[in-house]
Image 1 (cartoon, helix red, strand yellow):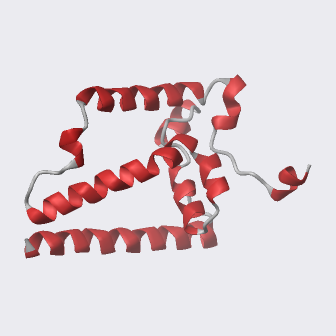
Image 2: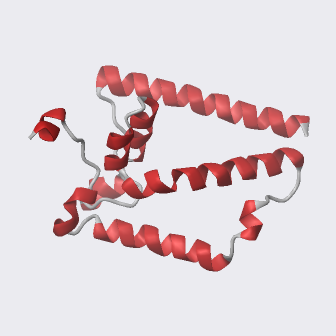
Length: 141
């Protein structure tokens, strides 16, 4: 159990350090990791805008975070609970509680929802689902 906890802490600390380094490079040098799907096809995948969404959440700008990726923003509490459940199960060397209770039909439905979101956000009529930034000047008008 202790070794598993150490592994999780190592990966957690490593992830935080990588996030801070990326944030520093993003702010000071305009370094951005582009979505390979968007770069090749010029289409937004269901995950486009996640990094910017997470940075907006860190700044407590929840409205802008929602604008970057509304679907993942809505599912973020569920995803967080599933990750915590998995980590607790990993540390205790036991099965997860939530994952086993969720029916496969629900997981399949979530996959379909994310695929449909990826398709719909690329239709010009639904361009408001694209990961865009809201400027304060736009909100005043």
